[in-house]
Image (cartoon, rainbow, N blue to C red; front, top):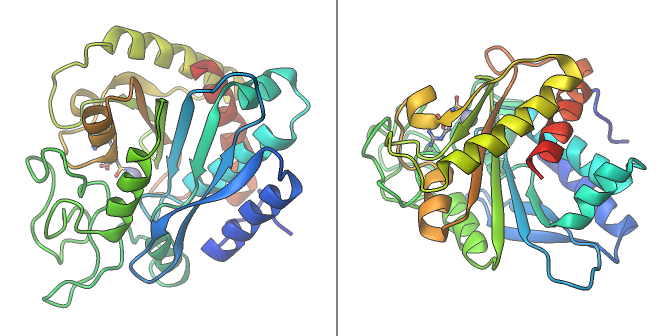
Length: 294
Ligand code: 0X9
Ligand code: ZN
C-alpha cells in the first residue's frame, strides 16, 4: 500500500491518485496535463466538491525539479489530508476551492532521480550534442534566459532549453494552466531553501499586490510554524531573497495569466534529502501553511 513513511516512484504516486479518485468519484477526478518526453502522463487530481457557486481554482505544482523528492511526497500527503481529514477546518479548505493538484510535473526526471542519479534536476529530453535535459524552471516563456540560466545543454543544473517552452512538460503544463478560468492561486513546491518566495524571480520589482501577497504569506508561515517551530525565510520576492533567475513557472503564471496569488514554497531538507520517516512532519506543516494561505 501507499504511505508517507517512504518515497515512491512515479507509477506508485499515480496509482495513489487513481485510487483516491476512484474512492471519491463524485467530487474528484484524474486530470492530465499532457505527456512527458518519455511518454509518461503529467497526472493530477482535481478536487471540486459540489457547491451552489463556482469556486476559484487553486493550483499546486510539485516536483518540477526531479531531486526535490519531498515535494511530491508532501503533495500526496496534503491530498490525503484534504480528502480524508475529519478536521472541519481542513474539510472547509477542501470545499473552498476547485483544486488542481499535480504532484510530479517532471515525471521523467523524477523517475531518473529515483532509479539512476539521485541529484538529477532537469527533464530527460536529448539535445543535439548528446546531453540530456533542461531545467523546467528556466524554460517558461517569460523573460526566458535573461538571468540565472545556462545556455549549455550539458549544464547539470540550469540549462534553459533550446527555446522557451522547448520542453514538452512545460509546454503542455502551461497549456493546461491557460485553459483554467478563474485561477485565484498558484502554489509551486520546491526544496530545500526553507523560504517562502513571491514574484518576481528575475526582477526586484514588486507586483501591484505585493503587500497583500506578503501579508497572506506571513499568515501562512505563522500557521506552518505552529506545527514544528520551523522558521522559514520570507515571504519576499525570489529575486531579493534567493537569486535572480528567469524562465520559472511562477513569473510566467503571474505575467501571462495574471493570477493574483502566486507563491513558491521552498521546503526543508539538506542537499535535497529529507528522512522518509519525517514526511508527515513536513506534510502537516504544509497542510497548515495552505490553511493559513486560504
Ligand atoms: O532555482 C529555482 O528554480 C528554485 N530554487 S531551487 O533550489 N529549488 O532550484 C527557486 C524558484 C523560484 N523561482 C524562480 N527563481 N523562478
Ligand atoms: Zn527546485
